[in-house]
Image (tube, rainbow, N blue to C red):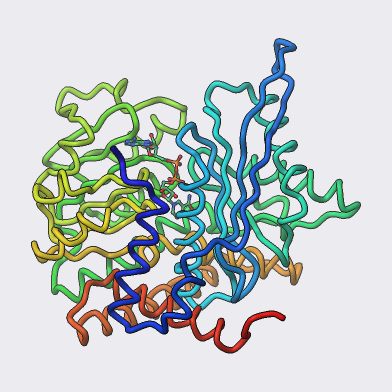
Length: 416
Ligand SMILES: NC(=O)c1ccc[n+]([C@@H]2O[C@H](COP(=O)([O-])OP(=O)(O)OC[C@H]3O[C@@H](n4cnc5c(N)ncnc54)[C@H](O)[C@@H]3O)[C@@H](O)[C@H]2O)c1
């Protein structure tokens, strides 16, 4: 049975608490969830029938600022998954030292089975149901698995209609025409690229000569594949939910992206040179860099021993279980943790939020420059602690993130 992500997130906290000798009074604060809202979302389907879906919004911590985290539409969504994802957001915003907390949301639905109008009604009703716990100074949702800028636009519009004025800062990842930020769409991929460059430099490797494997070909997997390809790197395999494809000399990412952008799946892509492989095979291919960029729980104790690469760069949230982490550490594989590797998205979301509040918009050069500065600072700090204490990059990143939260708890004290 797949590991419960909430249990996994709590286990990770225990590991770091022991490593940093955390005050036992602080530990329960880190594991508790500030608030969870479960809502039912009735919508009228196009054929006149009514269907009811369940949705969630969770705030793990707002101790350092408003909650921040994506919104996911998928049949796999449940409260424990959303709680885990909210916890990881707290560490991510803290590691980057952003004045934000950790939150997440989701609806248990297969969005591909809804028409565009049904999707809009679902989104608007869900927004109305969670309206009291979101807002620019409360909690700011963003896109995640199966949600996109159009969905963010509907959320912003619904929220604004209820408040009687346009409030762009309620969500990030909006279209640029209505308060979105340039660079947001590819920000997670861009952050992954900056971190990979820095990691490769530390190991004295040459990025262009490395063989790279990517699981997932959506927002994150697609944008890192695109950047790597444009910089002359070799992606030898990638996958989406339908299949994996493999070609030792390097896949033509430009053509594959054009194919995927038309709504096609990789299993239907025709190229005689490309071999179809399943996701399990893909993860255990011999390569230099493995980028899991699909969903959580992909590298587990079942396949960790067979992982054959130098670097795992976590594009997805929670792709490696704690048991698998131990095995990878023993195999001396560098695992660049999700809270660092994929934090480019939340970083540029923060820039979007700042731009919305100020009603003043930046150019792409500024976005990428500031993103690089913030993410590389977090990388260097993490790498230094990991080397000094002889601990994994994950534990080092957690020590930095948890220390900042612990300090905020200590300074604020307990109300009343
Ligand atoms: N979108 C962001 O900015 C962002 C930022 C940080 C982290 N993340 C994380 O990255 C991951 C991917 O998010 P995304 O926004 O790219 O989602 P997405 O929906 O755009 O893409 C997901 C991809 O994974 C594939 N996939 C789904 N289930 C799979 C499975 N069981 N096996 C193999 N492939 C599967 C899909 O076919 C698709 O190609 C998630 O863990 C998300 O939380 C996203």
